[in-house]
Length: 279
Image (cartoon, rainbow, N blue to C red; front, top):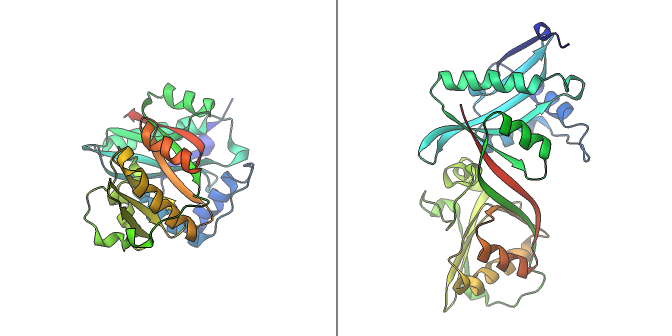
């Protein structure tokens, strides 16, 4: 039987970045590919993710942080919601029900300040995690595909495309499909200098792609088959500058867009559920 009196739960507002980094690295140390981030990289990730430390919570054992649930809070689909930016429990403290305890503590704390919905993304094949979240009332609201690849060879007229900084565009979404929490324009604006927009126009259509300095694509403007040539032009152009492009969270319902990307040579790396828990 677990003696929970040895554990303490509280928000992470007063916890230093050095301790958060140490716990992060311990929590992911036994992954197939162990994760080891620097304090600077973790700070940058928290900024991009919009983590609110006063609404993020940890579990402590004898004063040491052994688990954390990092949350971002923002307007999403017409309501203020919390979003799971990262969850981790240090290996030696797993199997004790600490995540469930931490989540329940988080649920009560968030609900007390008027937040009524909690969003998260979970890999579709992670049956254990899906079951845990469903047991907590999680409902699937969407399903996304994460793709990687590049256009190996494609001829295009360089005059057909243009590239502008994201700051040149209004706050409205460029995407023509429903976006996940972290792909919204308001989220990208937290690190706006890292993003640009590549566009191309042909006689039949026009496409735009938001991309980061590392080749991650969070938004695509694509209206249908008439945009195929312009989309290929943009992807061919980006493939000259990046060895691999990562396309984040395309809804599986976007069959025409996914089909076109697969035809270009991209591959689905993983499918994810978007789940919502009413607090």
